[in-house]
Length: 239
Length: 280
Image (cartoon, rainbow over all chains, first blue to last red; front, top):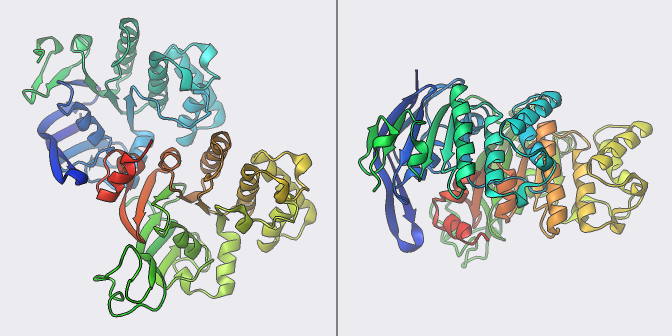
């Protein structure tokens, strides 16, 4: 089943104080089926994150279509969907994980994961139980559950971020350079997490800097340089 | 669209002054910011239209003088609009009637039953010499309550939920710190279970720790009571934490609206870009 189809997508940024318009990306085409994992690779500045942020509508897309197969709305073009529909989809269907953690001040790790569920309308008991499960699943040290994440290490913040995003069981999960700035051990942990998500049938779009990390994990790789899909991660050339 | 807005505002317009030949046409107005240099008329709010949806927090940002507070005062009937419409869809007899054209009695009903307001300055929202409990009871009486025991227990519950120690509930807000006054104001605004809550710069001037408390309280109210809120702030960090969608105002006009993270990361208007570049 087709989950996401990006057709002739492009994004420009108008910088008013320079009087300039910059093309971040253009003519992007790819699609993926339910349960697939597509990795987007390319140099920094090539527009990888721009694609991801446009799917999540943090950026306003300018050109082309981003058709997502929603459980609630059917096929919907994310580039033109109403804001309230996007808010619904973010709450129930589409998750986004970056290396940055942007959360309410003075809220503990446990509360952050619970709130994600409470906002979906889950009961307090369910939220509590599911949150603990998620924190265990993503191996966040129980000593950190009732502390505030401001002082967490990069890897701990990331795992908490993934726990918050995945506890809602999104159908589509966007991963924006989740492994950047992590050491090798933490990267391996993230890789295991992604394997678990894949095994659960989550459809994933990931942006990665380091190609070796993707090897064997992605079903498809989209190369920003050639604007082509490559079927196996191993064959993308470093550029 | 898949849902109905709870509040629809259409062409809300508020001017101070009669206007003149140079400034009275809405499409071709020669103003300096929001001020007509010829006749001195101030156009505080010009044709503001937006929707508020059930359970959402709508953020309004803009610099001082952009018309944010005037808009809130108009919506809450503290100030009279020059023209415009607003509709509340909340199953009562005045649903789908332009609330700006209702009688003052009907407007009072809406204020007492449908709206809550938290002002930037607690002096406007509280009677500083009344006890905190008395302040809440005042709103409850306005909403039709007459049972003293009930009102006292409701007030206690509310003050507890905003973390005011109950041994101080008989004290007047004038004895309280700014953060505590703000929380009493929030308790008062919530006392009639309003479906719509207006919050005007509620964290401005509070220290970071108290601000965190108030933000947490607002989020909790949204999550647990499903109240729709309009939050006015010039602090983008506050808006980022609270609002799902955000409207940017400049010189009495809406210049941009969108998802809050989109406004902050991909601002379209030159002014919004400057605002975001200024963010610490």
